[in-house]
Image 1 (cartoon, rainbow over the protein chains, first blue to last red):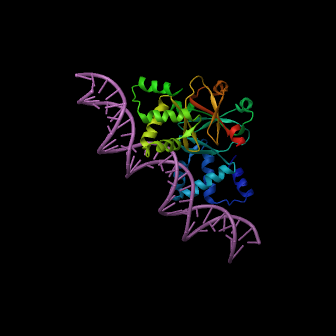
Image 2: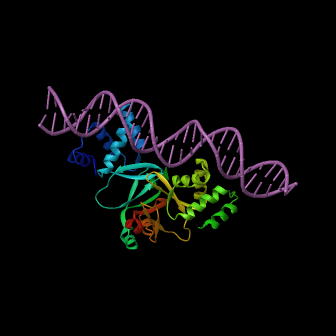
Length: 137
Length: 137
DNA sequence: TTTGTAAATAGGAATGATTACGACTTTTAT
DNA sequence: ATAAAAGTCGTAATCATTCCTATTTACAAA
């Protein structure tokens, strides 16, 4: 998912493409990893002086609902990143810098066999630690 | 991990076994699934009329640090359950009732091969959905 | 069993992330 | 260009959690 894809999704669904919406997408396109709302607020405050929480959170939720952003809870704070929609996979997440690495293993293939009679809605497989770059810094 | 095991851990480590501490353990022993702090507060308020947040959270953290409780973040709220310490495994978590089912699959065995040069501190594999009991209700 | 003291708790204020809301502004379709 | 719909602002409210000081309690040593 890149910036243009995301804007196309917005238009297709009938949402307006405002300047702030583009800014938010550009922010996530320039970062490659999970970022909390706080980082986005700081980024937009630098550009605009002030920014409404409403704008931040409304659009984060909108993007998440549209599949443009992925979300994960890290220590009670929601973090977002651009969706990598090409195929199903999971992530290693660096707890220092938030950058991620794809893990092409999905344990659901075998796990679902243990869950007959259960309704499975979602699953999460995440690995936490420090990436090589942060280890050397 | 049962109530007596937990009390023994407290004593061994030199912590005092107060009435409230036992109440908290009994609460988690009687529930079998992940429960948020809120549920514990309600439970203890029924018994005592009021209960200090400090007591709740201090003891939840203590129990987690001692390995007596397991913790997971669900929608920005921390949930706890008694540790099942016999062997490493993961959980299906019912999003209706919080009850869990052990999943004896750990994807780390194969995943760590994709992460040479990474420092791995932790991982999470959880499956969310509804258990058979909640599906029938 | 009494007592000294470190640990635990109460009660409430503070914090930090997130949500909610009425008034105002911008985008987009016509 | 214009009006309706959608988006944004500024701020207040909410919710879980943390922090603080005075008071109480569990436990060990006398």
